[in-house]
Image 1 (spheres, rainbow, N blue to C red):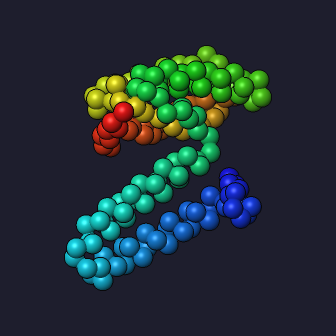
Image 2 (cartoon, rainbow, N blue to C red):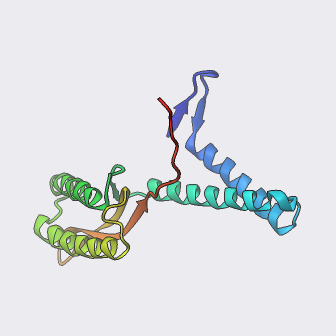
Length: 167
């Protein structure tokens, strides 16, 4: 992925951003281990390190191949609705392009969706803004190819703060 900046008209690649974040995280971890940060800054620097680590993890998840990703949805239920639509769109394409068995894939989807819904309900994420990334494999069994969900990652978003504007 390439981003062009207005000022310099240069290209910024996501790979370069990731390398910069990894280097910054390494320096933060080294500084914390060597206790080179003043105590007054330590908790803020640790928080920054956690934030960079989480950002790198999200970027890694987003870049995985063979995934179906929902947009950020207003609730977990909305994310599941979007995931279902995206799954069937991908299945339709794979049925035509790779001769994937629709019935077997649908059966696998239903099992995965049920587990995912149960998980989201047990974690209290059904009303929380979410994005779901579903990793899948195309499995071949007895000369039948089907789409099999392998792992789902749920990114959920909590209230970060409240700001008021006097009008």
